[in-house]
Length: 167
Image (cartoon, helix red, strand yellow):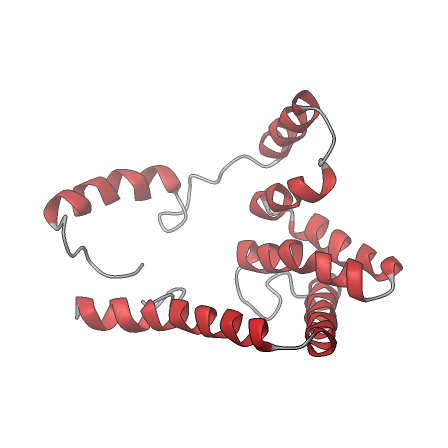
């Protein structure tokens, strides 16, 4: 059972070995494209980020991905494609969708874009207020990091070599 879960992924995010091999294959394929094909691909990525943002804006905070942090991560990482390969004014939609979801992970992933030349005090203040406004939710047994980390130590000690598979 552990090997199957490691290969295919678990029931939550399905990030097994096949998932990571697929990502590597996609990156390999992109490296083989010529510049015109890459620009077309990047425009398509920008459009998909824009569409995901519009879905969040017009009613479904989970977008098509089904998890606020995953949606926010996709949008915040992909926002560069919207900004560089589509009309710049369209970038406002991904930014607004990130504000609607208010995912701390989404905001933190924007830090390199926003604060390339700013000072660390300003950055630390922003991060402090993000976590002050919306602290980490400790009520969910599935998303409670404190519980997950404590439990994972016991699991690592039980099966230190092979573990329990992905997720």
